[in-house]
Amino acid sequence: MGGIGEPMKKTSRRRTAAIIGTTAAAAMLLAACGSSSSTTKSSSTSTSTATTKVKGGTAYFAEGPGASPNYIFPLTPSTNFSVDNLARFQILMYRPLYFFGVGNKAELNTSLSLANTPVYSNNNKTVTITLKKYKWSNGESVTSRDVIFWMNLLKANKSAWAAYVPGAFPDNVVSYSAPNASTVVFQLNKSYSPTWFTYNELSQITPLPIAWDRTSLSQPAPSPTAANLPDTTTAGAVSVYKFLNAQAGDLSTYATSPIWSVVDGPWKLKSFTTAGKAVFVPNASYSGPVKPSLSQFVELPFTSTSAEFNVLRAGNNAITYGYLPVTDLSQKSYVESIGYKVNPWIDLGFDYWVENYNNPTYGPLFKQLYFRQALQHLVDQPAWITSFLKGYAVPSYSPVPLAPANPFADANSKTNPYPYSVTAAKNLLTSHGFKLVNGVMTCESPGTGATNCGAGVSRGLALNLNLQYANGNTSVTQEMDAYASAAKQAGINITLSSASFNTVITNAAPCTSSQASCKWEMENWAGGWEYSPDNYPSGGELFGAGSGSNFGSYSSSTANSLIAATHTSSNPQAALNAYQNYMVKQLPVIYQPSPDNSISLISSKLGGVTQNPYLNLTPETWYFTK
Figure 1 (cartoon, one colour):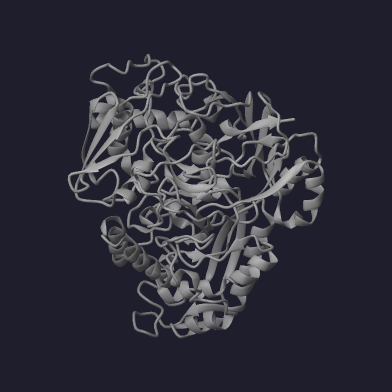
Figure 2: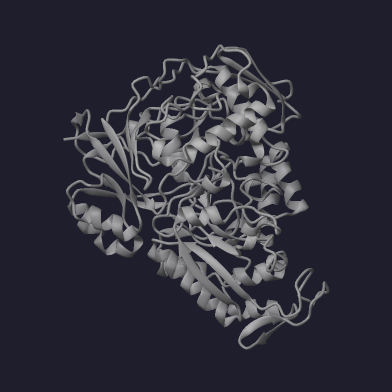
């Protein structure tokens, strides 16, 4: 939200690099599509013991290190598909059709969704959606035409969308229509699980205002009832997307643009800097059940966890909602004494870094399972959790999250088949045609036999690899230093480099070997994956061949079949078990510990706070107390 995470997983989104090191997993108790849910407000757990609610005031939220929002358009490409952009920026202004997270519970929030619970018929091949009464800030109603606008843009530009999985949404929608202003009907190409389709497909839709349906700022905003708008043809939809994507690339205009000022969420931008400082004020036209109590909400950028903590530790209420770096846990009592509550924020996700299977030099080697096994044996997850993350993490052995307890992870996902062992790593290399040459493992026996280096791996290829990771976080640096040290003992020379989170996720883009940009080898944005808006951990966006968030270009026909089965099987848990068991052994990525997203520090004067398991910010529920 795929996406990605905070220093998104996870569509799912890439998390920003978790604030204590990477990001962590959270349970998701899958709710039945027809179940009712309480509102976010009623399920909120206040962080304040005061009883008098004060209306107004400004709350300051600390962004993750080097992970400021930098893309505003909800139809987001993979290079910007992060929690910072989707869950902590866009969602404040542009509400998705279906909202997930009831307080701190991972389930569908029917109260905060723009539509009623979808109705499935025709053997689950017809889906009917009825919209609630919401308004855009320009006075127009949110209608079925706004959903059609999203679908038209998506259909024509799906390859540019990070959440695209070939054969899945929108390919699995044969047709879509708007019989009236409040109704949308989807006809599907076959029968799907209603829970999966709601949680992983309908969850991806964000209605777009018709005011955006143009190809130039010089054009007046069109009327919702206008005929022959650009999006109604493929060529026109391509032109509209090209225009909006270009506008989203101009960060300096976010707060002044006539495009982005049309919102249906509880907040609108007052100001925005290219460094990532975002100042929000309430949207007076917001139609949702929980209206903002604060007069302003501000997101503050930081280059490192230490920079953030220095500001917070100085007091003066410069940060209302920040985080405690794991390296500063000894100061927990101090921050409590100056008026902060300590509350770890856990999300539904797992952690990993990616190898580039299409790298022209090392791609053929990454495709060899024995080599991925050797790389995995060098990750000492128990030691990293104890020493660097101080226990605020769980291991990752598969794409299915482990903790807290959830109905998804089976026994295989809870057991490490590749425990830390330099010896095991060396033996895997030497048994597959590698020998130490001047201290570096080098392919001496090319070929495809059981004792050869593998298809495409040339004689003389030395294991001199590059690994870039997100900077600004001490625990991540410690982990990567430890990994490079272990690799050296196994004869693998890893050159480490670091860059901002946004730079790393931009570099880790899917590519083909002929592209100049495909030279990257391994990238670790230190945030893994957070499962939303694809909320069921079946992994199509991440590991399906050609998927928009398959960053390393992993490809397996077996994996494709297992993923497809999780969408349609009459026994969904058995299908999910088969998928995760395969991914445990096949190592499509290198798994690493999955920390809590952050050890949150929340002002004791701030009430109404919940920590959404999909990392969605909901400051409209917040209020100050005295």
